[in-house]
Amino acid sequence: MLSEIKPSRLTVAKAIDPKKKSQYGQFFTPAEIARFMAGLFTQRSGNNCRLLDAGAGIGSLSVAFLERWAGGGFDFPRVEVDAFEIDKDLHPYLIQSLEEYGRYPNVASNIRGDDFVHAAVDSLSGDLFTEALPRYTHAILNPPYKKIRSDSLYRSALRRVGIETVNLYSAFVALSVSLLEDHGQLVAIIPRSFCNGPYYRPFREYVLERAAIRQIHLFASRNKAFKDDEVLQENVIIALEREARQGNVTVTTSTDASFVDMEMNRYSFDRIVSPRDPEHFIHVPTSPEISAIERSKAICFTLDDIGIKVSTGPVVDFRLKEHLRDMPDVDTVPLLYPVHFKGQTTDWPNPELKKPNAICRNAQTEKWLYPKGFYCVVRRFSSKEEKRRIVASVVTPDSFPNTDALGFENHLNVFHEGKHGLTEALAHGLAAFLNTTAVDENFRRFNGHTQVNATDLRLIRYPNKESLIALGKRAMRRHEPIQALTAKQLESLGA
Image 1 (cartoon, rainbow, N blue to C red):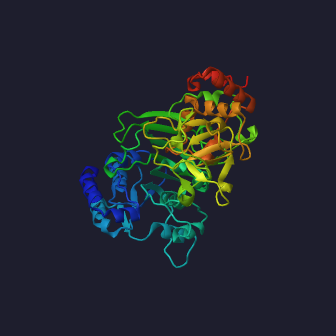
Image 2 (image 1 turned 45 degrees about the vertical axis):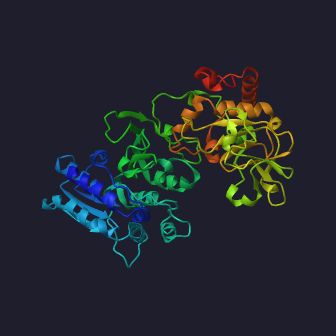
C-alpha cells in the first residue's frame, strides 16, 4: 500500500502552492522512512490500539503502521486511528490511503479536519464545550515545521497546558506525549534543533519529565532524508515512552533513508543527557568510543570557573546601518566580521569585502564597542567549504594600531573578561583548545546545525585557566597546529 502512496506523495508535494506549504509547514514522509518509524514501536500488552497521527498529510505514517499490523507485526486485535489534517485539500488523498484498511472489521479510521493544537489543548485543559480526545496507546508523527510567534494564539493556547515552545513541531510532540496513556509510545521525525539551544529548553524539560527516550535515529546526510522536498534541516527520528523508567538509549545512524548502512549502538542515559547540564542538551553519539574530552578529568571547568565570559558580538549591522563605513576614517573604529579572520591572521581592513570595515564612534555606538585588547572569537556560522563547526581566532591589538576600541559584529562570539580583553596567552590558549579536532567532534554530538551560539560555548567544558595559559604559550612559541594534539595530550592537560 505504501508503494502506491509514493507517486501520490510526489504529485501532491509538487502541486501544493509554496505559500500554502509554508503556511502549514508541510513536508511529506517518504515510504522508506514511514516503514522504519512504524518498526520502532515495541510490542506491549493490552487489548486495543488507539493511534494518533497528528499532521497526517496523505496518510503515509498511518498506512505504514497499519501495514505492519496487518502483516502480524502487532498483536492487538483492534486499531482505531485518529488522523488530524488541517489542510482539507489533502483529505481525498488521506481517505484514499486509509480506505484499503476499511475492509478490516477491526480497523476504524477517523479523519479530523480541526486544528490539532487547539483540539489537544481544549481536551487537556478540560474544556467543557469540546469533545475530549482519548488517551492514545501509540502516536506517530511527522509534525509541521513552522515557527510560533510569541504573540500568537498558538502560544497562548499552549501555555494553558504548561507548554512553552517556539515551533509547531515541538508543540505537536509535547501535546502528543501529554495525550498518551501511561507507557504509550510515540515515534516522530523532527528537526534536530530541539536537542540544544536555549529556545527549546522548556520543551526538552517538558518531554524529559514525562517520557523516557528509547531510541534516536540520526541521518548522517543533511539533505537526503527529505530530498524530494529539498529539506536541508538535519532530522532525527525519536522514540519515546510515556511515564516509563529511563534506561539505556539505542542510537542508530544511517547515511540516508535507504537505511542500508545503518549502525546501532546503546548508550547509558548520562551520555545522552548529562546530569550536570542545566540546559538538558540531548547528545546523539555517533560512536561508542568515549572521546578524549569525556575521558579527561582535567577538562571539567566552566567559563565561570575560569573567570571569563562569552557573548554574541553586539553590533547588529542593519540596526546601525547609518553609522557603518566601508573603510576606516578619523571618526571610526574597526568593525570585525568573521570574514576578517583567516585562521590565526587578521585581514583588516579589506577593501575588497562587501562588508563595512569600520563603525563610527559616537554617543549612539559607544555602548556597543569593546576596548582594544586580546580576544578569542568564534564564528557563529561556519562556511560551506569548512568541515569544522567551531572556528576560533585571536584578536591581537597590534593589528589595530590607531584606535583604542573595537566593534564585533553579531556573527561573532567574543570571549572576554568583563567586556575587556584577555591576557595574550589566555586568548591564544582558548583558541588553541577550541580548534582541536576533539572539541569539534565532541561539539557535533549535541549540535545539529552549523550555528555555534554563545550558549553552546558556555556549556563546553574547558581545562582550568592555568592549563589554557600554558597551552596558549605553547601555541605562541611553537606555532604548531594545535588541532593535531593527540588524545593523550588532551587528557593530560592540567596534570
